[in-house]
Each structure stands twice: as C-alpha cells, then as structure tokens.
Image (cartoon, rainbow, N blue to C red):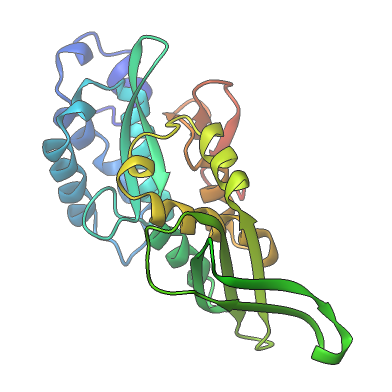
Length: 261
C-alpha cells in the first residue's frame, strides 16, 4: 500500500473522492517516521482530526498544503491546533484556492527553544506606549543593559515593540532582543496568512512569538528551531520525490528527511 503523498494524491485516480480525514489517515506511517518518541502517533492523529472537525474550512484546502502543514508539525513534535497553541493550521484563500498556512505559536517557539537543553528561561513581553524602556551600553553597568518598567497592566495601551530574552544554561548569561512594532507587522505581512488566523484572534501572543523568532539567531543552534523559522507562515507541501517539505510558491526545499537542511 502506497502511503506517501505522491502515491496518495498524484497517482491515485480515486484520491479526489477521498475526504481530508482519509488523506490524513493514509499518512500515519509517514508521521510515525518523524514524530519524536514523546509524541505518540495516535495522539498526533487524534489532534489533527479534531482540528479538522473544529475548523471545517481546512477540509476545503488543497491536500498538499494540509498534509505539508501536518508533516511540519510532526517533524517539529508540536501539537497541530489544540489548546496549547503550539502550531495553528490557518485556512487562507490565495490565487483562487484554499491553502493551509502553518503558523507556529508563541508557546511552540518557546518549547523548541528549550528543547536543546542549552536554554533555560525563554520569555517575551510586549512593551507598550508609556512604559519605561531603555537599552544601551554602559561600561559602568558592566556593558549592555536593558531597563523595562511597565506603566501599568492596561493591555489596551498600544504596543511599541516586544522584548524577548533567554537564559543560557552553560554560561548563565542572558540574551535579549527588542523588536519594534513596525518590524513585527512587517514580518507578519510577509507571511502567507497576512493578518488572518491567530494574528487576528491572538495578536498579543503573535507579537510575543515574533520577538522569540527575532531572538532565535542569538541562541544555541538547533535543527528544529532552524526548520521552524524557515517554514513558519509559509505554505508548505510534503513531496515524496524530494523526501521532505517544499515551499508551495517557489518550489524551494525547506527540509529533507535525514538531513539537517
């Protein structure tokens, strides 16, 4: 029995009659090959099918983008949909057809950052208009410094940026990165989902997630984090002939199984 996407969709004449549930179940062996031991295949399948039932627009999306997003979630070991907000499956109509855009959530990026075992605390906080915030370099303070004191807890004050920081276990040092809100919005607009999906429903969490993403290059190298930042908010498809994920718009190989690419 053929279980890869090419066999399931491209060479199977009855594939168009299959439901999205059928297609996902047909990929169980492929999911099992890449899922980490901590995530059972049955659990992953249940989460995927529950999300498909909860958001029925996903069933109208192209099979390639749906399975590509789920394969990305499997490779990263993140829950698709679900209460944790690890990875959102976001339906988006582009060029006349519905596609699934995988959007990694704030908690998903934090999880990936810490999984290497080299990073301790990872957080991001929104800096709002009226907060006391200053960054700079001062030899009398021992070098780089960051000062932040929120004016109050009113989350209605407009954001001016996001401050992300992480503690490195080996050295005990703290890496920080401030990302202005216009850079956050520019990063959002470059994504295939634009301002849709969690950017519309959970904007604060997406701002914080973007802060962690901007901090990622300053953290210890991680294959999972590198894949996450490459594939995040891009329409991905699983291609058996290349043995991995490609960008649906450009054909660029995002990840090949068995390699660090």
